[in-house]
Structures are given as structure tokens and as C-alpha cells.
Length: 198
Image (cartoon, rainbow, N blue to C red; front, side, top):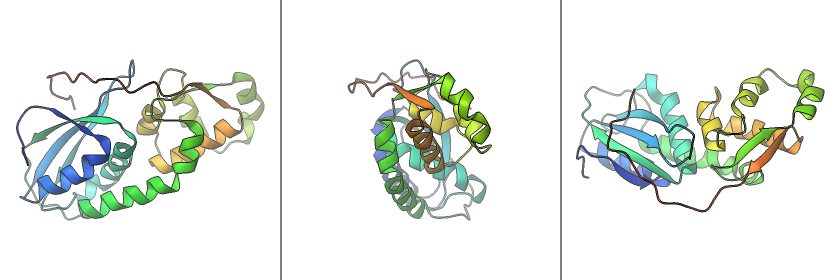
């Protein structure tokens, strides 16, 4: 496994396997950045794996990123040094779990579109139905701004990705959110050499 300092681009669906292989030799930290979402500022995280395990205090964020990675066409990754003992779940188990969670939301995700699909609120419908929603809907609606792609909404929502997708699917089927644009053709990604900011 090449742990050089530069960034490289991988398919999002490879992230778990890359982490598993890199951690086989000990501790590793990987900066991960989703890069090809147009005007949406790329979003990223620092994932740490020590001896094949994720630190307990990072399990929730790592779960989120492993699930998001499966929906992301390409990710920029950069290896960093890491130390310490991780006492949490194994990275291999979390990667398998993300696959199971994604199977649960395949159908609702297909109804909405791909990771670059942009959702737009129907203000009339939203005004009619606002009093009947649970509190969880508000933060997700605020993220559906007509500019941010679906993956950006899911990444920034305060809920696990599979829960967020189900909420979005209900809002789309209820006509509150409309598909503003579908996923464009695959395009080449340019990854900048600058480091990912914390």
C-alpha cells in the first residue's frame, strides 16, 4: 500500500478496502475529500484506523463516511501518520455494515436520483404541510437549498445517511421537494494539491 504524501483519487466504493489494507501494517490516518460536486465546496474528514480498529470516539463519524463513500463517484485521499490504540469496532465490520445500510436505502435513493441530484423546495406545498412534520424534517429542508447536491445534503445532515435519505424520499414523494436537476454525465475530476483543511 502506497502511503505517499500526495493525494490520489479513488472510487468512493473502494474507501473501506483501502483503509483495511492500509491499517494491516499498523496505524493509519487518511484524509478523505469528496471532490466533484460542482459549486458545492468539497467536504471531507480525517479517518483513523489503528490495528484494524476505529477509535471509539470516531465510530459514528467513520460510519457516516463509509456510507457516504459508497455513493460518491470519486474521493481524493491522502495518507498521514497516526499513532495510538483504537478500541472501537473493526474497520472491516464497519465497511460491511455500510453496505447493508446502503441496501436498505437503494430504492428511496433511486426515486430521488444520484449523488449530484439537486432538490428544490416547493414553497406552496411546504407552507401547507409544515405543521404536520416531525422536528427532524426542518434541518434537512434547510439543506435542500436548490444548489447543494443530494450527497452534500446527506453529508451535512445531523442524522445518519440512511435516515436522511428516507426523510428526503418522503419529502420528494409528498411533493415538498422537487428534483431540480438530475445527475449530469460523469466528468473528469481535478484534484488540487493543497492539503485538506480541518
